[in-house]
Length: 184
Image 1: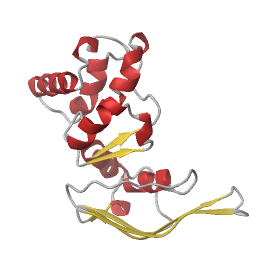
Image 2: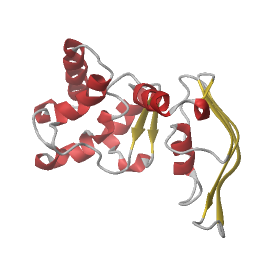
Image 3: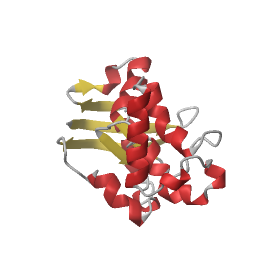
């Protein structure tokens, strides 16, 4: 469950002379298992909201509660662990590590979570099979252009079991991969 109460985000210029109100009084409740879309024109605060929901940014005022816990009160290391274990962020840019194979990129969050190697192998194989990219397992991102559209959504939200997947630009995800990401 995600609860947002009277959320406001104001960006200020270096000397505070100019203010941009990115979010003003946002209230939102998302039940577990519920799927929502956040839409609006460029510059309307969609990415700012997602950044605050995931703990990548902080609100100027208001509160975000995820599973009953206010994320603003989490210490840095707790917040990092929370993001790694509970939030999958689908960036619109290609965020695979170039020095790792596709298989290693997908396994990375599981390794960080200290999952047993046999479970990592099983989960990575399941995901690559599910998305039809098993033949790219040992390819590096720069050697497999198809990886860009096929696999970039995998690394964050689906490697471990996540509660939330937050795409910053859903249209950037290939049509073929939208349904599995949303319904898996």
